[in-house]
Length: 75
Image 1 (cartoon, rainbow, N blue to C red):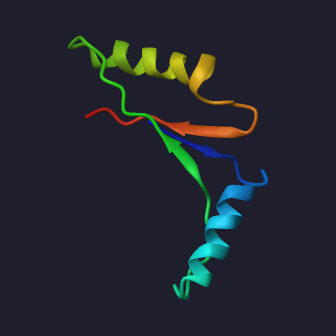
Image 2 (image 1 turned 30 degrees about the vertical axis):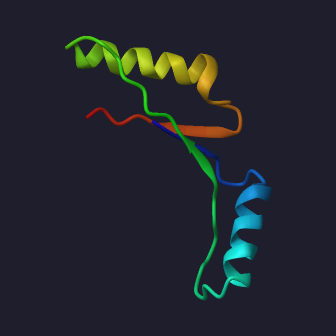
């Protein structure tokens, strides 16, 4: 799953990365947003349950849903 700040929420780390990339000579880099990636292995064959469990994990712990969005991808 990927967790990112919602649009409109100040992202100082993304801004610092954007500036550093420019200082390193990478031109054409626009707006940079920083986020988190969680790679979680869930036992079981029931994809619907796995997705529901991962959503609950985000809602309860992994994402601050006031300022962050999350996306779940099952492979």
